[in-house]
Amino acid sequence: MALNATIAGVFAEPDTLMGVFEEVSKMNVHLNILERAWAAWYLWMQNDTLATGIMSFVMHEVIYFGRSAPWMIIDALPYFRKYKLQNQKVPTLKEQWECASLVLLSHFTVELPQIWLFHPIAAYCGMDYGVPFPSFGKMAFQIAVFFVLEDTWHYWFHRALHYGPLYKNIHKLHHTYSAPFGLAAEYASPIEVMLLAIGTVGSPILWVFLTGDLHLFTMYVWIVCRLFQAIDAHSGYDFPWSLRHILPFWAGADHHDVHHERFIGNYSSSFRWWDYMLDTESGPEAAKRRRDRKIKAMKAQKTQ
Ligand SMILES: [Zn+2]
Ligand SMILES: [Zn+2]
Image (cartoon, rainbow, N blue to C red; front, side):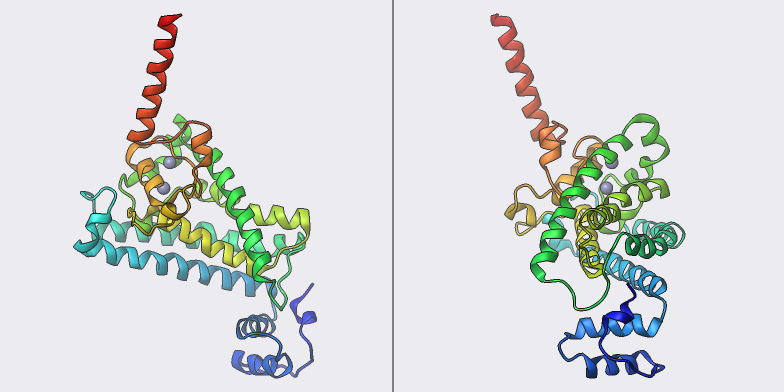
């Protein structure tokens, strides 16, 4: 379904985006400003695949570097050192610059072509991108489902990437930084980027394929949430107000920082339950629990 069909009214093509926005606004007073801007963008572009492609790429760059910037500032301020998980390892500007360059190169060479494929595939599977947007409740529910699906995909494939040859040839690059920082979230081999992106992009595609009910705007909110999750997990900081202190099953930076420090365990992305259930938790507390369990088992064997 082309977006044009979902907008009430017909107008003689104004040639500027602002002109289209004003036309849309006049004829669709029931839409909010974001919905009007969204409709104007698609109508002005006249090419839905290109419109989605440009919007997706720009949004990804703005959120990725926009969300990483505050972490760079925090790294430069000694006040925050007390919240840093590995406080002896603060990234240098040079390290951050090298990391950002590789990430940017990968965004243009690996991610851009994939972003272009997204619209035709998603539209084929029944994704809606008209206006108005879905309700907040529906979006929140679907995004919660995507978080659970992505976390599961991430756990298994990330765990697989730690298998010897796969680690050496693919995943080692992501482990360049044993004390991660925000920008390092997508510092990885192209194969890894593609493999793990299937969890992020494939979950909503699977959902729309099965239910026929997904809006592109929901997809965007999901991607923003997922980028925040990935960048914050790599930030290297755990604050008393961090989400994991409110939601104990949320992984957060504390969980992933240990993974980078020790190279083993804590494979999931957003939640703690997979590592807990399959006994792959990392860090000294988990190691102590494992040791205690072993001692108990040995004692039980002796008394038999
Ligand atoms: Zn890893
Ligand atoms: Zn990582």
